[in-house]
Image 1 (cartoon, one colour):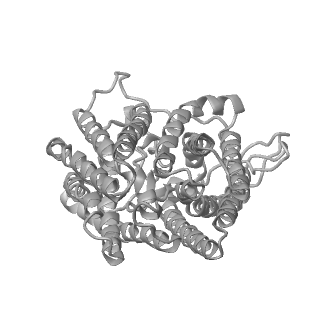
Image 2 (tube, rainbow, N blue to C red):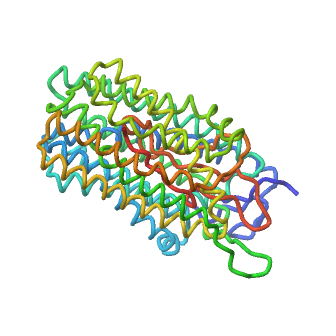
Image 3 (cartoon, rainbow, N blue to C red):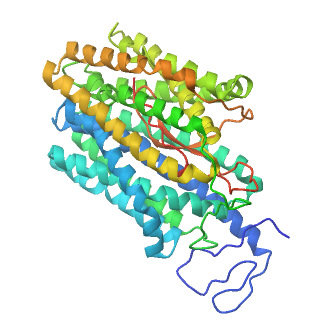
Length: 487
């Protein structure tokens, strides 16, 4: 029996036959066509990673900077980087209902991707007009994150039916690397364009061009998604226990989730305010080129460190890697108050990328070990919502501190030291973490956002893990989105 999946070509006609099966009019397609369909699907899924990553690098990365360019202030810029994620985490809960209403995972994903592309239209118009209210910017950013995160559960289920298990590991690893390069390209190109725009006294026009490119990239992504196959429009993941008994809970999951949520609050006290601290006139007031280089430094250092961190996790266990990360991220925000020398700031960024790369890798691995397969979808869906709520709580506390102290360099110093103290308070929780011993392989990831100092917000693509008698491979929607926070 061939390992290639049966697939329907994504065309406008409903008469296209199923490869290896019966078509809409009863015609049987030749089995030899399956290889061609699979190659086409692989190319489309691969290219979609490039398009979506360009959107992230050139668009989402610079929304907080756009808030500053509009004169909305440091606090609004901080909220733009945190509050909209809560809207996305809430809206992801409607994805199963959306799939049922549309009768297809693909149609739902394409619909959401087109809506996300449309979110850049008002941003482009606002940049051309030169005006947008704080509420309007927050609403657009929330719409962007909501429509993006609504695609996750449906896309992960759908793509699992397209990619044969025998090639998933290699395919998603390559897709992840290409996506990282595309994000970096969008990030560098965006920073260069903004730098030129500011030099020519037309920064808002440069923002308009960036958001237009980002919107077109996502529209291209939606087109690529629409032309992929869909073997079963309403395929569902099923987990069957041999005796039908409800699975026992694993004590480690509560300890792990408790630590991550506590750390999230401490981190987000400062994280959303690094962009205004870097670009705002009341603090460092860096150029767009210098700002872009700092983000790129942490992004690149994390990418380069991941293979080494994967070997450490395989040799010493994910718990030790998490302990290393938990200790390493504590002083990061305080270090920003020591010196304004640019080379020193770059060094902090390089260290930050490694620390947060270790945190994300250990977190992804421990989630698989601490939470039983039968509970992952439910537990981690609600964890994503709780994590987003923790981000808003931390960001709101930071906003209160800035508002009370006044937005200036000394206020930022207080904010960063308070964040470091909040992180330090979570260190004792590391002693009760569960452990996991894993194979020396780094999970493939999909980049959701690029952030100052942590490099990116990643979502793992671990559909390539071997099947077990009790479960299908875990999908990206079953896994935590761990916004590591800028430090």
